[in-house]
Length: 247
Image (cartoon, rainbow, N blue to C red; front, side):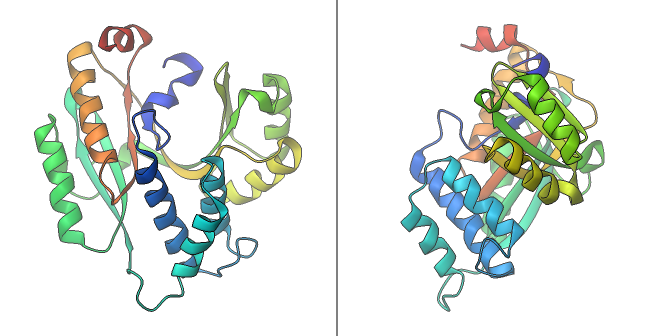
């Protein structure tokens, strides 16, 4: 979890090994429904919906589930979800941003505040930590997409800002408003990406020792386990050595 693959421990992704599949599909379905409600129900005409559908496909979500989530957007009896962002501090001086889709702000705020307080952190006011992050586009490809030079050349031609390659895969960064265009050009050159999304990229990271890292990971897991939480971002850096000690 260090070096070029450092971002894999900065963002606690929904595909983590301890994530229950049903919980994952529920989060993906919610994003699809919200994206379809905010625009056209056709992925080809709705960039956000296309990203949500592609993310679901990358996690092997059945086509029927995807279509039901899209259809739910036009249902009068469907839930009305709204996007909410929470910010807080974790162990070791880390900064955490939580993105959620909720139909009950009070419930979600209470659950997130509890997760922070029980795991060495505290919820802060909006804007308290986001100033330490840049809003960027994030595109991830598996190592099988090509060697570092091939992916680098494709990323440069597509207008990407930066690329990080390792044996685990390729992480490509773009300006936030260029994400859809860059992702589309890369798809033509490299095929479908594993993940395409807007991200909170920290301007500086904080190294975690074994004690703080253990508590921090419990906090991230508690947040990620909440049905309303879509993504958890942070500015922490956990070294390979610390991860090995944590087992």
